Length: 381
Figure 1 (cartoon, one colour):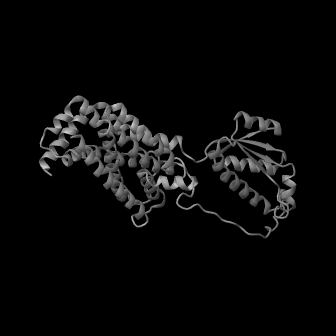
Figure 2 (cartoon, rainbow, N blue to C red):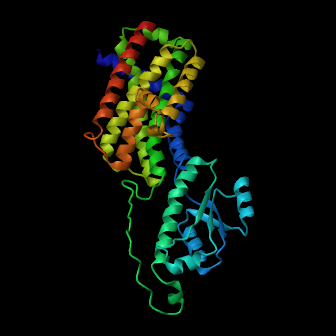
Figure 3 (cartoon, rainbow, N blue to C red):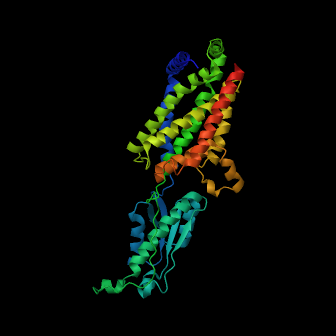
């Protein structure tokens, strides 16, 4: 390994990249745009959801329930006069969920909600499965909290100016969501976007590099130099690796400053792991490039690679909900382990000791793919 030749190859690659404005814009702008887009478009939290309300009680209690539903900003209640109108709104998609308050809501709470609690009906648009599941927890918690407050006092006595009665005996259940108490979807998507960008974009950029150089004849000229396969590999990996490492820093800053999402764990640890994963993805891109005859073929391989990346890596869909056989398959995708690490660092503040198994898997993938890339480039020589 000759350090002078490696430096010459790195300088050559940097100059070639800088001479291509489109590539530079892609390397810098696409990660930031993807981060902002995914964190907003694919966020799983409930905000401003249209909620149909049929208040058959027409009472102060019903108005209090509706006010509590609208207070947090998660729902925008829209009143309906009849059940038929409410069901028609669900069919048209005008509302995504609905709440039906019974006619005897006031009287049931006044009699003592613990003995005969009133039944509040909740309807969902099953076509929006994820949204319905997320909204269910919000609605249940709001209605339970409101009902508990109203059931612990005698509303009629309170309206008459009398002292409220004692709260009925019972068990109070307190729940708390660890690591993400507000159940926001943005931190979840921000952490996953690092894995998607560093997997897809790195492979795409490098997949066409050698193919284009071969079509232009510059790669064949490079093979005539005294540079070894290992030196050529480093000449390709180091410049792009530096650019994507800079992208990681930019994405961390944009996510923190613009979106308000900072890693709960060590930023240094996260950056080191990300740089290692960049090398792994670049090696995969070089393998696609060296085994493709045209740039179109290299791009097609990248697109085929991106399909399981989105579907099976846990970026958009939870792995634990997949069949057992598919869960085993996901472990063979490097992005699965990296996304698992990023979300653990960002959301739970995990460190190397907690993530050693995924770090070991990433290291094995990295060493294996770099070795395969070196052998592939050597055969093409």
